[in-house]
Each structure stands twice: as structure tokens, then as C-alpha cells.
Image 1 (tube, rainbow, N blue to C red):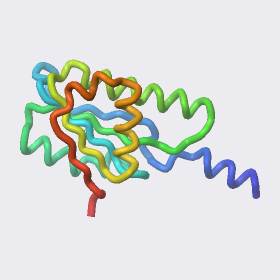
Image 2 (cartoon, helix red, strand yellow):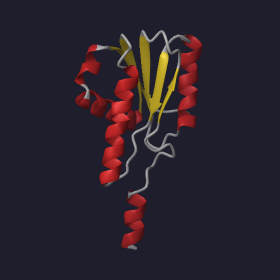
Image 3 (cartoon, rainbow, N blue to C red):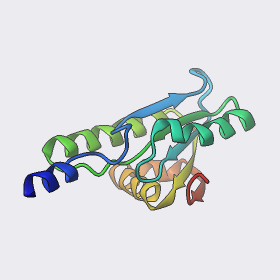
Image 4 (cartoon, rainbow, N blue to C red):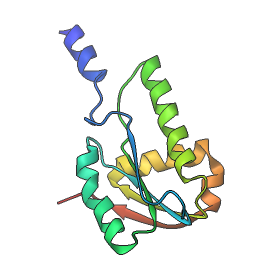
Length: 133
């Protein structure tokens, strides 16, 4: 039983793991939108939100990811790499909008901002969303 419980707690809730997906133009990166998913959100679930930004502002960069609840040294290394990649993708943007979905998205934004405080200087707006219905 203990082995099964340990195994379950070592599994990521998000089927996308620590993935980061980027969409948008390679040249004009004036505005970047960080779409930070709810617990268990797959990239496919975040496509709905990404498509809204793509229709409204096709020139904006969108970056999607979801924090995963895995434990262990490898998971910590993957989470640190995820934060690094998120920050790197929006580093060339003049402005950033954060679309945080539920507590999980907000928590990922807080971790990202703690690790890369310069992101706060680029922040022009936040959207707090309770998830897709």
C-alpha cells in the first residue's frame, strides 16, 4: 500500500508535465501573455484560452504552461527548468500579461516572480480565472 501511495504522489497531475508551449510571431514580441494553467490542465485544455488571445491580438506572443505536483530531486530540477524557460520566452517582450488560472496558475506566477523579479517590471496586467467551464 505504501508503495502505491508513494507512486501516486510521484506522478504529475498535469498530463503535460512541465511542458512550455509558445505561439506567436518570432519578430514582434512587444507583448507576451503567460497563460498559467489550473491544476491538472493539459496544453490542449489551455488551447481554448490561447485561441482567444490569438484572435484578439494575433501579434502577441503566448506562452502556456501548468505547474505540476511531482516530488523528488528530478521533479525539482524539471520545475526549475520550467521556470527558466517561461522567463526566457518572455524576456524579449516589452510588456507581459499574466493569465493565471485558479490557485495553481497563481502559484506558478508567484514562483516565477520570486525566481525572476525583473518580470514584475514588465507586468501590465493580470487576469485571474477560475478555469474553463
